[in-house]
Amino acid sequence: MKRAYGFDEVALVPGDVTINPDQTNIAFTIRNLTFSTPILAASMDAIVDPNFAILTSKLGGLAVLNLDGVQTRYEKPEEVLAEISQASDAEVTALLQKIYSQPVKENLIAERIQTIKQAGATCAVSLIPATTKRLAPVADEAGADIVVVQSTVTTARHISKSYRGLIFSELCQMVSMPVIVGNCVTYGAALELMRTGIDGILVGIGPGAACTTREVIGVGVPQVTATMDCAAARDTYFEETGRYVALITDGGIRTGSDLCKAFASGADAVMLGSILAQAKEAPGKGYNWGMSHPNPALPRGTRVKVGARASLEQLLFGPTSVTNGTENFVGALRTAMGVCGALAIKDMHKVKMVIAPAIKTEGKYFQAMQGMS
Image (cartoon, rainbow, N blue to C red; front, side, top):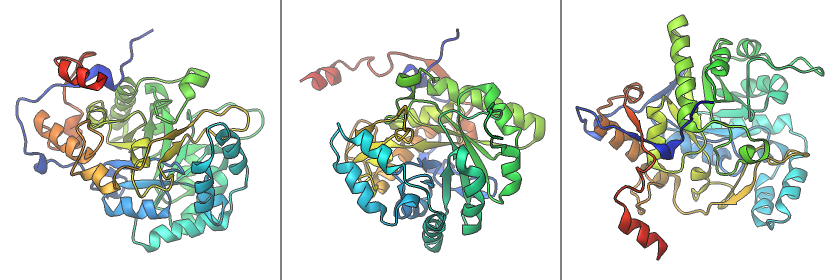
């Protein structure tokens, strides 16, 4: 066994040179697309609908629309989303399983994508491996800009008696848009996936607030170690080919400090879920639920109440009204980069980290007492 580390167990070491935060460059690039904000909104029905995707794009980020979700199963998804948010805790799992048993409609895929594109926004869409061969060309033809193929655990090699699995190298030839694949947490799996020709990788298994994969099947690697191992694979692949594959840390980020540590671990961007479900514009109306939840036999997600407490713009850019690091994520990143002497995201990859289990409690006696009172 080797020791693995999560966000709470490490701290960033300040640099020998400091930089004005407003002079830092936080741009994120996937193939020929560049985003001024290196934050992706997770492809969860409670977070991304066409309106949220348009707003995120206007703010410089990228929201991923779930093409296996309620937006493509129902003509009026707002009614279904309201039903989910109003269900009791006892009935919500059965309700979700019923809602997600309806078939995906190809005409709705095209409609949703065109709504986003007509607003001048970048459109990223997410598919599960089982439907990718059939639906990725539909999304491509409708004008999507990026396709994300996402499952709990993704590898380049899959053994199955029943069908010929999804071959990522073939998918890259099949569609004209960049391909992002997830999720993985190991050097070997990441390197093999990169060698198929994909453009980006999502890192993270089980750390999300609405995900119960670790509780149900015991699988996962804490995000600092997972990101560092996959970043090492990205660097190996870049040395082999001269081709840079973007690394996106997905899940487990609750505060600005977590986000900053993800970039120092090697991320080029981060994907946020439950944090963005708290945006007043999010379609989940203060709730979020894991996308493995509707599994008919073994649900691996749960609906969590996150509240709707701030606008998306305030969550990303402030001004913040709280002191716990859950607003103004971009401000936190720029400030950390300035303190650590990192002009660009790739400079953040070189920032030194230390193992520091007590970093959040050291000297915080009065804060701790206040929390207990």
